[in-house]
Length: 421
Image (cartoon, rainbow, N blue to C red):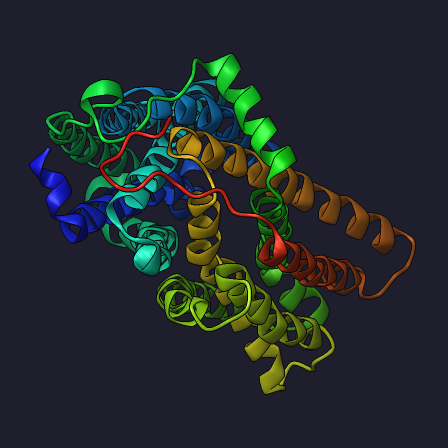
């Protein structure tokens, strides 16, 4: 277990794996025109592949695999997940119809669900509370990096390999990474440094008991879900700018993509590192930092909905919408992990990912689409603007839950090297 003596190397390796996961996840978006044409997919089928298939598989499996990571070797769980999602990424390249692609993407999502819960728990062990937010922020930099690289690689590899060959190549790379990860040992229980989690049914009951009894954890999880409603604004950003602000579609796509990558990466990095430095000075620590973050970015997002096309405020608000949710990852995950006993850390992360994917991503985007369609059919000229104002307000309301977390009790994690009982 000597690899645990090199936390920065482990962090960089986990960042690489997380980036690879989001490349594999988003290559379907990067090759959307080619895949929908070759497989004769309707818009509804494409939407199902990028939405419901992913959310249902990833969300549910994150809880189950998080519980397994709490009970057994976290490195083995991650390795198995990498092997599964990589093999199914390669299999995606052999799909010839909607059903085959849906099955492959379902298992890609299932495999990727193993990474975040296990990796977050591992990083919590490796980094002290004073540096934990920064470590989490760097790890979650894989989200914007993977998204940006997926589109870049799709543009670069299409002429040489096509979408099928690109999926095959990514699958092979992932299998090599997964096999290497199998060599890392992470024992639990009597011979390890961390407590072994309970069997799955009991583990769920333990986590529910924790959420009922620990205001810091419960409030942070709820606030984190509210904060992810900012992704509704990101999802509909291009449609909003083109339809209701009269901007050119091609220019808007490039602008939104560039801002997403730049301010997403800056958000994860700056939010994580800065939260560690300011948490020691702000009331409420990491929770107080997120309240400050929402207080700065939330009003800018809201004000941009009223700005004209030529206004700088419009672009400032777009930058804030990309920056805010990703900047909150480091401090939010650090707060949840630091207030959770080590035997439940992967499981609580899995449950958090499930709630985010179901309520903020799936239901949030669905409700926004349905309500805006209804308003437009009723003659409302700026239907999307009204809906996005509402989601921005809900994001700002999330600050109330972080404020409650700042006042809530904390459960001290077991010291490093000591088995909690």
